[in-house]
Length: 342
Image 1: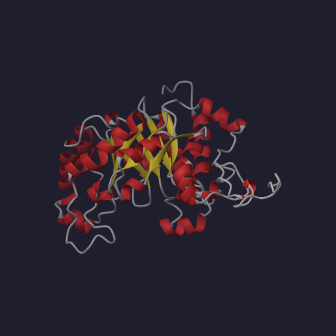
Image 2: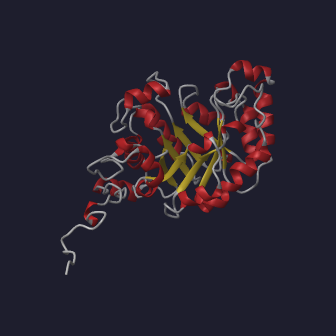
Image 3: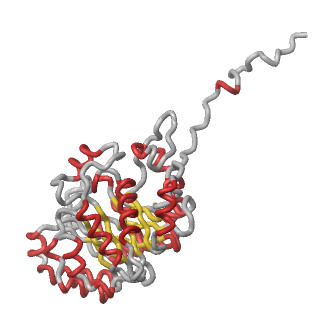
């Protein structure tokens, strides 16, 4: 009788020889200092990074393994581990700037995070730019600029229905428009009027924020447009803008519904995004520390009253967003005084 031995391999080989499932992305264990800082942070202040798909964050965010996960794998599967970090209560969702995503994708993101987590969603760039993105053809204008119907249908409704209460804010980030375009479009006053009409046409409920990259637009008319439409300033740490103190003084702070800061670049380093990327990769250490901006962010938070605070940090600010946040959170805790009421 020619029975097969239990040790004889099957037709397709032993089970042990089949490809193993890729390991899950695990969070790095929190150390005692991280836990201590988290416990002392004001509950309405959330830190986060611009996206999360960075393989170089091993030992900082991802539990190290034999091989670092790819950026693509982290983009698909890393959000849950990211949201487990004690200091990461939010994230900047940047991919939505380049193309809208549907409510199903938003729900998939939300499912990977706790209920207290918040997403800062960048709106479709076609709503805020008079310049067509690369590959969009040779049309002479951007037909979706100021299009509140497109904003409601493709940005607001999917984000609200997919994220629910995890939606922190929708950010309309205008690119640098340039003095020539601003002048030919009627000047800063005309921009503020169009902004007011656009924001006032959006559905009531979500928090909206506006980020500009032209200091000429930071006018009283602009501040009034935000106030009257119920939107908030997105304070940008970026070389094209005045420092945070000047931005704060130009905005009616008492009308701000949220305090949102995006720390993008080091204004004193003189680097472009591409240059900073080349200098700082793989984003696992602080290279060009920006102490003045860190202190300005802390001052802004300490004078924000009871408004929810969101601080979104880019790797290109100092070299490593997780380390920038760790330093920022620790210094905020040290700076807190008993007389300060959050």
